[in-house]
Image (cartoon, rainbow, N blue to C red):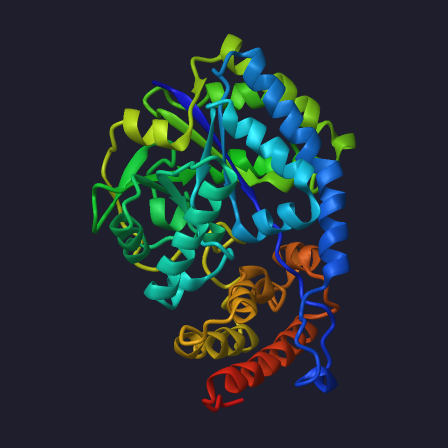
Length: 402
């Protein structure tokens, strides 16, 4: 069995509005409703609606032989319900074909796996419940952690939750001479299969497709097929993992990205010995070749494939630690708005905006950030967190250190 596994991350954060020091204690609504709605609608028109329609056509055209998978964050599902019911309906149509797999993640696209096992599990359960609610009782069997963050211990936690497989990055410093094009298992709980992203071929689509200075520009279907055929015959799975916003948002329609995807399945079926599979099919049908040892967490991000995009400087660490210092108190308060804000404040994007990396990685970080600087992102977030602490004190009667 030689197969291609397409996985797409679908996520939008609830962005914070500009929140001044003088708003603390006066304004308890933190979210930029206008930006969140307008960005969702913009990306819906550029990406979600046309790409979902294309995938649906491809699934029907090839009678289900073409398959893809999605991890849809809880914050994205909330925004679909609030701002884009047409997008939700289009995803439901895809899942109803029976040839699209949904994966679990943390509800709020959080970094809880790095800080709190209890909060991590709680957010996973909330995500499970949301998927069941919106997708006719669907129950995922494969897990994708926020930002593809993975370690041996995180994998063991995921295995305890009953998942069959987990996705992560095929980081070079972890693999060494090994290939990402095999199935591996967690080194602590070998029953958990590990699927690794082939970042070279994934990033050729996600990051380099429209880059006219790239040596291999333009990326044609024929060229990509030649690269696929160059994969050694004994390597059984090509895992292409990327943000769904690649299509139409990060790579505009004018680059030819939709035409590329439209013609890729036919080229795979006629010019290679590969098929298409979902992650659960890959995990169940392809025998693992051995354990993958990841003692220190990895992610998809930047050249280092580590955590420094989110927890790499004093600003990020201060905000992250201060947030999770509140966990026990938050869990004593039965208030829907408190719980909602607690979840949304955990979203990894808030910490990504505080990243101070420079050079090529810094360009990527600044592209996604609504702030003028990482320091502005930190100040805005900490102002909001200060108000959140006041609300916790008012609800619980317990003083919270500012």
